[in-house]
Image (cartoon, rainbow, N blue to C red):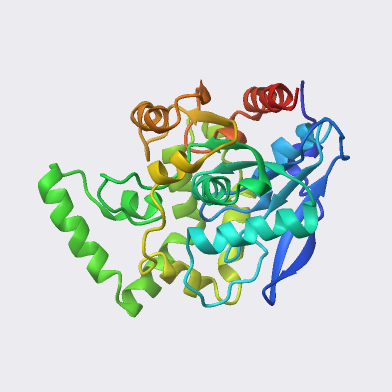
Length: 311
């Protein structure tokens, strides 16, 4: 099924929801179906509801579809808080309860995948199914990493692992200093840096448009955006992925962009299967954001899987 150019380039109008005194932006499309759960799409680090345009345009034909900007991102408020999985878990659960009004299938990319897993693993009453697209999050035996992965790719040279670890820890300590954080924030929000980062993680470079770059850059102008950025360096790690998987009770679909340089899809797949063997998964010729890069391949897989669990 082809999606028209207008549908994939024109942002879908949204609205605001008040949550804990903060404005949360979301979009809604499609009509409710009695035999199918609604979908809730959750973006990754630095992205927003705009990143799901190509998916909403097609999935709205079969589902009631919601997409939401996590607190601190997109058009949502950016208060000075401690950001992490617990905060976004609560936001998503309350959104399902107050706005959607029934169990939903959560689909999350990267950081949004981890936030969605937190909901599915800890708030069973809110989730009918879980779809993870190149999902982030640490497993118990992994070394701690700094989110987002893009920061490390910009500041760490290709060295042997031991030296790389030493330099990486040193660099991280430097960037915990306010002035260094400010300089890095100003650096990575430049359009040419955003493009260069996207070129590393998109297999199909034609998917990297000026519109996409501006959609990622624009929220960095908002009040509080720098404070959100700084929280990346101070937020403690949340619950481990393996712990959350062992608490999961709903169906799980993994959709992998197999050319993702930030995470090894094959290695992570083995770990997911170790803790939740009954999952379903597919690999796509794409990078870190397969929903945006190959939507015409991904949308039918997501749609048909939701149909199967709703039968």
